[in-house]
Image (tube, rainbow, N blue to C red; front, side):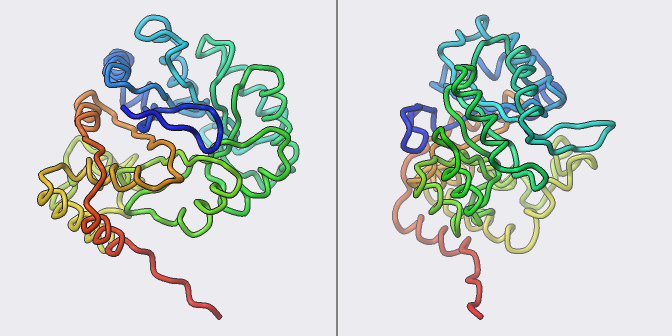
Length: 316
């Protein structure tokens, strides 16, 4: 698996990062063990988690596997803070107190003394940006975090944060795929300007770009589960479905899978450092790791770009 630099920093990450949002719920500990082993054997190095994933269970499972399945030094560990749950409600808090307390808890669950990359999970309107950035700076300066970044920041938010922060912000983790190209308007240019690399979550259109939802809803899929169906539904009909159909046609002509073509299209963009894939099962990961990730023919790239192009915003 190819290794890339995160933005203009010296941090190397694998072109595919293993997302662990379902670890501890949809993915049990034994399946997670097998998936991490398969990922590392394929050359993957970068594992993405967050303190909010399954209320910390994702990080705890990773911590149990470090030193057993893979040496800590062989992984690039990425985690996030700023989002939590209290009494069943989602809470956003990027205050210095909350961020640094979350970092302490993350390191304890992972059983390590440092993260390779730590991200402020969301923009928080209720906390001064300087305070949130101060927590990132403190974490880096103390050695508990090697690199800092943000997640789900739009273009101006990223630019503002990078201007104010006393340590480089090397990453912005955002949704980006053939079905979600909004990042191209402002986020990609802003990231290039400040030297941050993009970590793309949902690079397979929340599963739709695998083609598995064409004409059906698999019984074991997120769309079939009332608790998670809302995460996928907007990508299953109308324009997203037409894009997926075009992708499937292109993949058939290339004798490749839709999954492979979708990831290859995304990874060709210069501002993208890694695609964060989130398989729930070992079989799903196997399909992802089988992707060639080879550059697409120019004609195919052009067709996919045109069919998925966002409508231009009228100038008043």
